[in-house]
Length: 508
RNA sequence: GGCGCGUUGGUCAAUCGGCUAAGACGCCUCCCUUUCACGGAGGAAUGACGGGUUCGACUCCCGUACGUGCUACCA
Image (tube, rainbow, N blue to C red; front, side):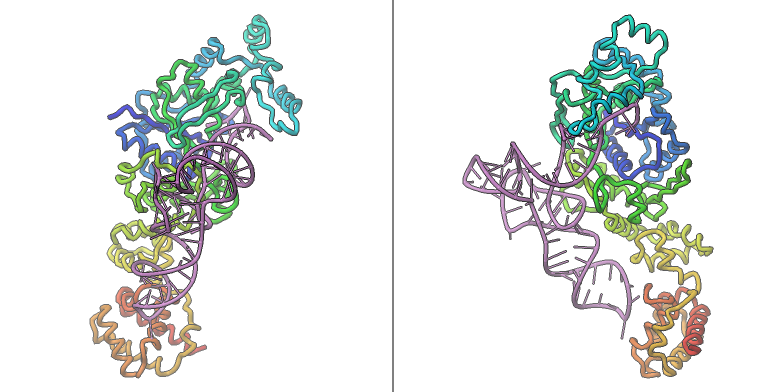
């Protein structure tokens, strides 16, 4: 086991976005490839955003994907606790240490005062004034207040936050595994809050403290975190942990297929595709957001889709097994730019994965969808059906869509397509063919042979009766070979469907 | 507005100075199949723009444009 340790650190505020799953995947692949440890840490420092069930939902998603963490709140290692809310007592000391070393300070400004500051300094050219090196001299903080007054305020239990004191005129530079060298001017970064008035750390403090304490060696997160990276880099340094700082990689964003901006769950609902890994029902609003699992995606296909959304191995390979991904993945080959999500290609992947399954596996996968229609098919029959229709199936629910006629008599048939050129000869043909049923073995080949024989008898061609037969049996112009279907559904059912269609066509 | 990051066909993308610019999805045509799908063969479609550097630039540098992210006591 190497010393590589990575972590996925979601905040349990809702469903797990496909971008989040990709971050998990990349963490997982990196850990496996390097024989390291994959940690799941719950970032629940904002109690206002706590959502019932969201944490469990994350576990369920990871389980469905097969991306099980080596250490997590459910399976603690030696670096627990793994929920930040349970680590609350750890952070204050570090924040205080930063104040004492002069890299942070107490700020007593109330939300109202901050609000006032922002509106006071707001101008056309500076629409969002920041609490930065120029503003901090005008606020109520331990940098400006006399020491005894600060002490009095503290002793009186006045609410305060601790802010980082951004240095002046420095350039913070670091090497991102994907982007290479990235640098920031500290004059342009504000004094971020490190410890909130409720005693909880903000992300900025927590991520540094926890990554250090959990001995994280490589930190991967979305590109949206890049602007606050200098704060984290500085914190690692100020806390005296510089040489232990993880290597960073900021992953490109996943964007909307149309329009602009990053992909949100709303886009999925609007464009008709899932954005979350699994269905998520918000307990507060009751709103349900659709997931890939319920849409009928296979977890391995889903993961393959995400793996190549921003990464490729430099060859023409499109389909990768988990073992291949582990072997080939490298952060350096992750694309820098954001990628628009393409649902059509996602479906193509799922179709590919479906084709690679055995009929037995497909039957097991399709069974719940068939059962949901009130059909209790036996496994052997289901397997044969699966083998016959799988090329036509892209998503799991397609097994019913494409194969329902194997289980139930079609409720309605496209009669017009038969009636068009219907005549007594054809009627005689079908009756004659049905009469031959008792004299043949019920198989694809025998059915086809007797069908051809009857065609000769009545002077008909395939084009005259093959399509009508299909419609009689399946209801429309789709499905696998007609004789395969007849062979499967049996003699009585075949006769029943033909007779019913003849009656219907003759009557109208 | 400021700052960061990015920019190869409609989409995902290869290319690490030699390109007549791969491949995949999607689209179109044809073949196979008297259904649909699968499969096969073709096709249309790409380096944002302007300057450098270089024998040579999609590849390196600079600028511009555009896109995107951040700019909370949210993550």
